[in-house]
Amino acid sequence: TPMAVLSTRVRSVSDYFRQKFAQVTNPPIDPLREAIVMSLETCVGVEQNVFEETPEHAKRIILATPVLTPAKFSCFSSDKDGFEHALISLQYKEETGLRQAIVDVCQQAEEAVRQGKVVLVLSDKDIEPGLLPLNAFMATGAVHHHLVEKGLRCDSNIIVESGFARDPHHFAVLFGFGATAVFPYLAYQVMSDLISTGEMLMDPIEAKNNYRRGIGKGLLKILSKMGISTIASYR
Image (cartoon, rainbow, N blue to C red):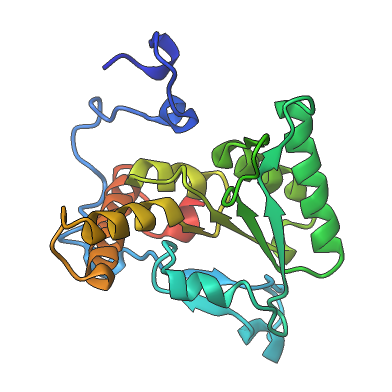
């Protein structure tokens, strides 16, 4: 398979960030033998001053994995004290253009954080007829860097609800671009559809758990190849 930049076919944006590790002899970390130092644990909440210690520092939600289940994702769609959310839709009119659509999303994110929103949900779900989906990888990277430039990144968390994320590399690209957690709704829907049509004989909840475990193992493999032991360091 040719590299995305040399391919004659239309490729996913994430394919342009796929690196071959053929030149590496020994991975710096073995995610199986050294599992005790590896972690996919992710914190959600406002990052406080590291030089102080207050009760507010403890106001965090800890996720065992950044790949969200439908139940965990639904928790972020209801406002709780300290975890207010804003839903930013990743869809735009064709005449707006891709560049302006990304700028608009960044401005919506900045405005939401200034209004005290801690969780920014970037969603490409429920695209309306006549509108185009904004690529989740582009939007995540743009929002992350825009908030960093404005000095607002530590006050917010980016959660991506996307149909673009399917395999470990897609998730790794989103986390590398700044996403705190990802909800792969389309992957879950495909599994449910396979089960309902009888193509896959399995309990739906067990299937989703297996999928998340598989993605987790893939993420640990990617981290280990870079010599990184925690997903927080990779983000």
